[in-house]
Structure formats: structure tokens, C-alpha cells
Image 1 (cartoon, helix red, strand yellow):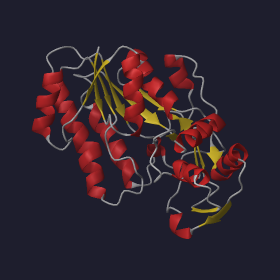
Image 2 (cartoon, rainbow, N blue to C red):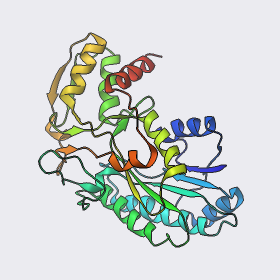
Image 3 (spheres, one colour):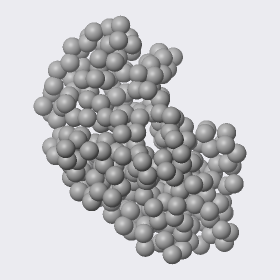
Amino acid sequence: MRLLLTGSDGFTGVHLSKAASNAGYEVFPLKSDLSDAVAISEEVTRIAPTHVIHLAGISAVTHEDQQELYKVNLFGTLNLLDALQKVSGPIQKIILASSANVYGSVIKGGDSIGEDYCPMPVNQYAMSKLAMEYMARSYLDQLPIVIARPFNYTGVGHDNRFVIPKIVEHFSNGKSQIELGNLKVEREYNDVRNVAQIYLDLLQKGHKGEIYNIASGRAYSLEVVIDLLRNIFGQSMHVSVNPAFVRKNDIPVLSGNPEKLERCIGKIHWHELKDTLAWMLTNSKK
């Protein structure tokens, strides 16, 4: 099994590459720039993968260069799919990583989001991912594409530009105060180890043309996260809200329904958030 993995040196890619190797895949990291269609085509032809997981892209909602979001997330994926069409051997499955951000503010009455919810993106990052999804569907006659919409997740190696590793770093460094944005927004904070395994499960069991939430259905406010870290670390921390960190059009609650995913791959035994945070704290001290 020859797995072409884009974004292999990123946060998710590092964990997924290790898990895939342990599962018996021969992992081939994509080295070409996604914007270089010729280089992508030559590299993909040379690798001749049997499986593909496409993680590479811009993942920050706050990314300032909006044109680059589309250049990488949309047109970079188009270049990859064009190249995969030319592979001589059969490709068994292609997983494209989209984002739960495509749903926007669609939750009513506290319900978790199912794949049948109509996407309502509220920022250019989410729009670029949704455009990628629609573009990719035009290749379904030629390629066995599955789309994954991961909800928020974290773990060891997550960049401290993101809020959970930022908070963990403050606790680990013994800081007594921290500035954050909206403390009330609720997000899933799943474990990257679970997410890596789910990608591998979808490689084997995901159905062509389907969309799957990578979600646990468990959402937490930052207030809850901070309380958990206080208990784990045995240290108090003063938290203040910096208006500059409060995003416009922030989604109040973002939590997914995992039922379709679990019907496909089976029951998922998620790491508890407190265990994920403890894992991150332990590794931040090394």
C-alpha cells in the first residue's frame, strides 16, 4: 500500500505519517509546491500511489492573504487531482481534508451538526474549503474521493498560534495571567491521535463521494479548558479578555454529529480532554 501524504510535516501530518507506517503503509510525503502543477504531476506519476490523504493547505481562519487561501486550498487541490487522474495504476481511495468551519453558524437549539446541514461559511478560509469540496466533486467519475470535515482538535506539536496550545504553554511556563478572546465560544477539542486513526479508517472504509464529520459531539468553552488545566497543573491563572482577540463573525458553538462516521468505521473511543491536555503539558516540559 503506497500512501501519498500531503502536509506530512504539519501538525496532523506528523502524527498521521507515524500511524500510517505502523499500519503497514509505505508513506510518500509530497514534496512539490501545490501551486506548481508540472512538478506535482511529475512527482505523483513517479510515486504511483494506491492511497492518498491530502492534508496540505492553509489552516488558519485568521490568515490575512485571502487570495493565497484560494490559491492553496482550492487551486492547489485542483492541481493534485489533475495529477492523480494521470496515475496509471488504480487508486483505491483519496481522502480530502476539508473543515467543519464550512458549516458556519448553523446550530439551532444546541443540536450538533450533521453532514446534511447546509454549509453557511462566515469567513474566507471556510469558503475556500467549501469551494474545494465542490470542485473535487467534478472528479468523482474518475477518482474515488472521500471528503472529511474535521472539527477542532489539538495535541502535542500543535502550534501555539492556536488557542489550546497557547494556554498550555502559559501554564507550562508558570505564567500567572493570559489574554484571550471570547471565553464563551464552544468548540470540540479532540485528540490528534484519534483524528490520525480516523483518516486511516476512512482510507479503508469510507464510501466514494461521501462526506464525513470527524467529530466527537463534545464541545467545551475555554473557561472549561482553563479549569481543567488548573486542576491538572495545580496552578491558578488570571484570564482577561482582549477585544483585539475577539473575532468578527465568530461561531458561538461548533460541534459535530459523529453518527455517520461511526456507522462507517465503527465506535470511536475518544481520548478524554483532560488526558489530551495532560499529554500536552507533559511534552511541553521536555
